[in-house]
Length: 86
Length: 448
Image 1 (cartoon, rainbow over the protein chains, first blue to last red):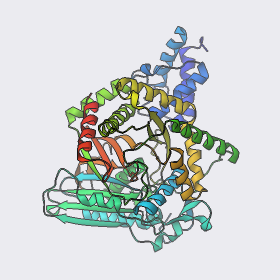
Image 2: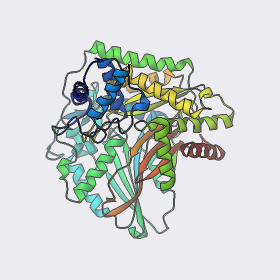
Image 3: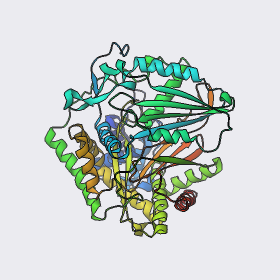
Image 4: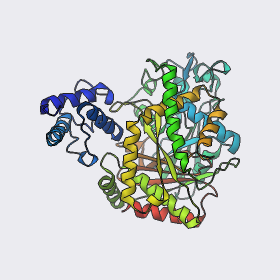
């Protein structure tokens, strides 16, 4: 998983979100704002657990800033940096 | 659904409803009251009381849930809302009380008494409304909706009030007050009974682990005492609120500010225990978790929550940031271990377990206590809704129910940039001096 590209990770995060974490319509894209789409404290923790299961990386709480949670894409970029640094 | 008279059948209670029903029964039996929630709106001039009465009556004609008796199916099956029997039940009461006096900062005493006056699941008396008009409404109105907690949870009650106003303004049909599929029978496969039992057992085991250092509430494990709840609301200024919100984000994270508020609530209770010179054992607090799908509108009626339990110890109360860090770790561990899902299954067993047995088991686990105190942080209160039935909303907040033991509940919410800290207490649990200590500690911690 550590050699996954940001695009692959974006797709992975996007699939997790659409797979039941968020009740979103067809207009939800990898660039949609996650908080506006309903991502709350519970959903974000469930998302982190799903990401950990999928990639083995636990994203530290201190990194869950509004900027990093802006969209599936920005979160995947953070994840990519974490994987490269891991 | 075309009307109460033409409606047949029943709607099952959720597991969380049944859980609340067990405690409602216990409060009825031991404390002569019910498990009643309240939502309060403090309105400016112009409230259309007759318009409100009309919309409520129309809603109760169309939606049998608002006055459906609750009973076990065939006398021994899972409890249901008996929709077909709703037509024989009285309409929800809407009472208008005119007061010549100026509106005080405190809410009217009448609202406290409504928390302690019985409603009835059996007779379909599920909700009532009281409007206190000042100078005939010319200077403002205070409105309280008081309901049996299983009719809807905090999120559902806000959605209900918002949609009532939409009906009043002609933006929504009364038939669409709940979504069309909300009152349909539940669908979807459930886990096999054995697996549900295992999940419920895991929840119980986690609960029992907390009993290694059992909590003691400020009320103590009191049983037979008349329920006599009242509450106070500490309304923070816009400047103070901005400071509290910023501090909560910095110290607990931008998506988990509730842990900052929980830590403050823990320390406020601890300050009272210290002043009393009593060992609290530990602090055990349940946090309601909203189970509605994220991002959707979600259900209005019935309760859709699970519980996440936190435990903290007196020796952790000195260091606020370390306390928050520990609560954060507990939260992640609870989600990781499936505590929320396990809680759903554990509460589901209240569908079949006798009410009295279920409530007894819940108290027995923690040596006679339910928990140390109740806590809720519901974030924005009716965000974006500026008027209600023609009157400007000056303030609004929730008043969650609390049984005489533990006898203390702190609920926090934000209304248009103002933080409200609502403290619900059973009479006699706090002395005046202890209340002052509690409020001072809470305020100081919130303001950082």
